[in-house]
Structures are given as C-alpha cells and as structure tokens.
Image (tube, rainbow, N blue to C red; front, top):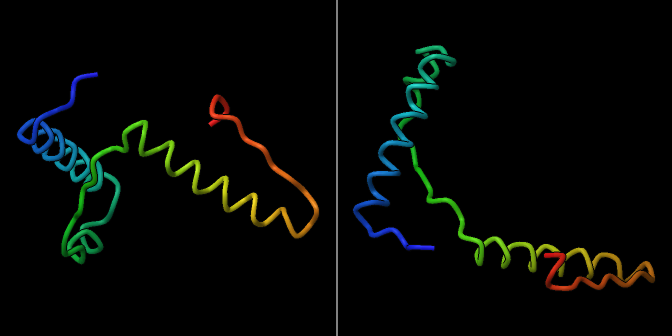
Length: 79
C-alpha cells in the first residue's frame, strides 16, 4: 500500500473536517456549535498501529484474568 505524502494527508484532513462541520451544522443547534472553540482532526490508524492497540488491550485482559485463574492465549492470526 502506498503511503500518502504530507500534502495529500493535509488535503484529506481538510476535506474531512469540512464534511464533519457541514454535518454538524445540519444536526446541531447553532447556539451549541458557536461554543466550540476548536476542532482537532486525526489521521486514521494504520494496520500496524491497530495491531499495537489490540496487543496492549489483550495484555490488559490477560492481567485481569490471571488472578481469577484464567489464562488467555492469543495467536497473531487472531489479532
């Protein structure tokens, strides 16, 4: 998969931000919308980043189960 350069990422973020703001204007009353000072947009997580999050969460579940006498084994294919 081809990595996007910075200008492509900025364009995607700007387009997404505009789309989100348009959607908010249609669904949220202006009085509330005017109270929002700043909107922060994040890039979507990559597959390796998602795998890291899953690993961290599964490790937390393992630690919670250990005192109860349970063992959780997760193979890479199940992540």
